[in-house]
Length: 456
Image (cartoon, rainbow, N blue to C red; front, side, top):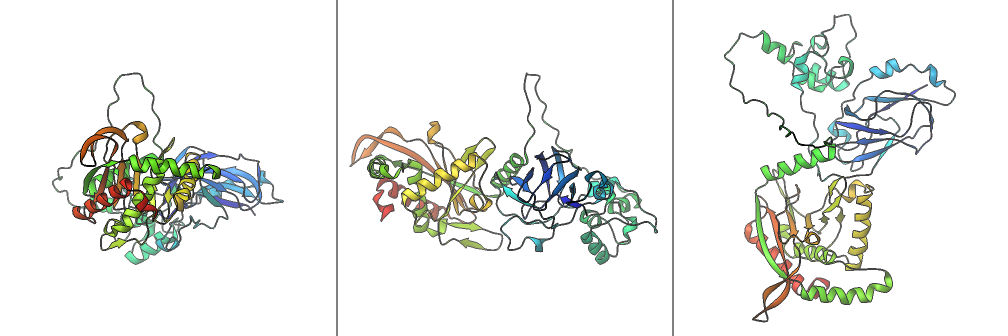
């Protein structure tokens, strides 16, 4: 019997994705563990593995297809002994989405497949997106468009189990609801936008007595591209997510910025001595490794800054997991150095090198870039003197580090020249008061200027 391969839910918030690339073609044999496709979600690009053995009989969704909903049949696998040419894709092609529910994801940190297709997915890329509430927004526009005509009472009504349950609770007659899913299938959004008795909300509004139209703002128009030689690239789901999440951060999180100048000479001297002693072990500490350690220790010394804000509670973490900004060809990623406050500098260095290397190769696991209690972004290698970083919700702060440079500086009570860097902390003012943020910056400065304190 043939097996339907469906679009999996690769994260708790995934509702649809892009079938970026097929790595098999019709007629290919696959075995358990073979990678069949790459699927791009709002969180990452994932490798989709086969668990069952068989022959790819039909590919129903072409590579490059956007907005493929979770549960949509994307291919048919013919089992051993079955003639792939005899597989009927018609019924499979008509299969539609399975509505994921919250219960499928609660307490499940790993990606899951709610459709039980027997296939798994491996993450190979990242996004800065943190945990979000799961839920599918109602698509009133799709319902209003009437993508499927109402069915006669004797016809079979195609609807997802979740849509049927919601319809029963609302007293809806499904035969009068227009389906916006594949092949007119009724999904959750359709019944949520319909009124009791089966009449779609849009249709009910159309049959109501006419009222003066309320003034509405025109939809934003796409930016006009100047008549200048150029090239365009389609936004990836990851880039769209980065844009959305950072926009939400600046719009919804009240940022407060606190800046200090930090003398680096003592830290640079200690780094040289430690690297000389670690050379035989093949370890070479970077300045950033030591700053990650300093931030971790500072957060534990000022726990009011090692927090996360939620609508009804303030979460204070008992360890410092530092998300470190790394630039990759696909975009910015923040792999996490866990327990940065208690790790040795050599451990931070080797861990960071491994994470950064795998981040650039798109080989990080979700738990290696999702989470963290605070972030650090260092642009000193580009010669940037000072900048203000955008907080990565739901974290409460991020530290922006500029370049170290020779500057006039008060050394030992006298004006001299020292190696100085500027560090700016961005704090979520809902969770962190200015005085607490100032205390964190003070402790961080002291640890960097007297670095033996972070090793004690």
